Length: 288
Image (cartoon, rainbow, N blue to C red; front, top):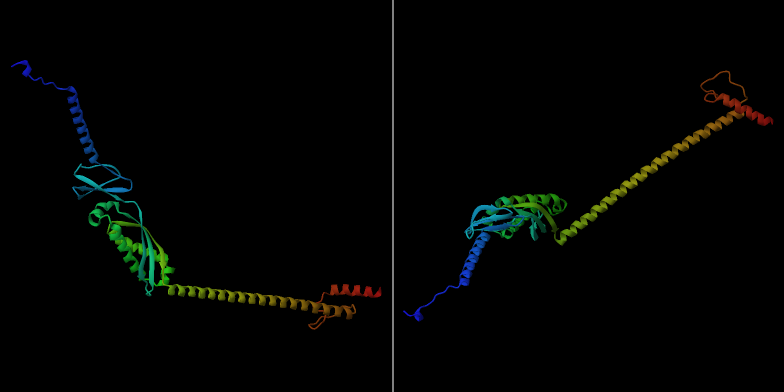
């Protein structure tokens, strides 16, 4: 065979390097994909429900980095922090058949020990399927035990009873109640007018009672003052009478002491030494 018919095969070393680089990159990428697929990060305040090909395994992932079987297991992240739910314009009837419109605010959280049960048995739309119906039933049940007036005057008691009722209902559904608040209670215009009139009547009655007590007190004070003035006048009159008798005695006494004393004697009850002194002073003035 001639040299012209011979083919020379040469291998370009650069192509071999390129193939090697591509193979390495593919391997690294595959490893990275597998590593990433085997890691799940659960945010703070959340729990992860482990699913094995879509089925709930019962295993729960905590906050932080968690490992799972890549392409086989996955995680459904559930918020277990306290959340607020508001229910407005709830219509119910009181014990005395008054229509009541109420607005409720509830702070709740998912029971983190039963997140797998919640996800498997109830699902993630639990606010509409569980919480809202439970609140509606709670309001109707509790308000029917109180009159419309009691719903106002015993609001704290009513709120506590509603909270206990709701907690009992929702704990079976893996939801815990942290706080329950009656934001507003509205009644019919006729009832509001009746309450306002009753309050005005009570205020007027209290004012009348106060005025009566004030008048009674002022009257007692006037009587006490009059008694005091009368007593003072009596003492003053007695003092004046004694002085008049004394002066009359001095004017008519001859200065001689009596030889005997009897029960009807004028000298009894008089200070004779003072009388003698006053008599002498009177005589001196006359002589002068």
